[in-house]
Length: 169
Image (cartoon, rainbow, N blue to C red; front, side, top):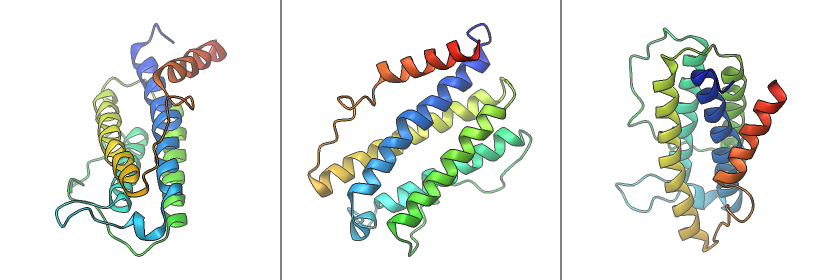
């Protein structure tokens, strides 16, 4: 697999999204209550719930792109931060569904170098918004996540990727 840089990049991307970002996102949502999910730090800032649903839409679009590389979305999502009257369990369900579909799509995707740009953007974009969510969750709850100490770190991520490579041989 390391001989195929695109396939290796897809594997890294999958593990970063599924085994690094996803558990952090779920941990943040689970620790807050419904009201905290929708608190806006200011009129010009988005709530944790809005940012989460923005991430979900971005993951869903990239899942579709993995399956249909020629698809074109006529409208961007840069301003898509929906404020909907749904509870924590609905948000968590949306996250679960989006990330599971992404994992399946990337496992089935061809090693097309043209998709690398979209995947790189998805990873970078998700990491940026996840940082906002972690920061806001810690500010609201005073809870300090110890992701590194609990194994959600680059070392563990690399080990998962290496193990996946060994198992695929």
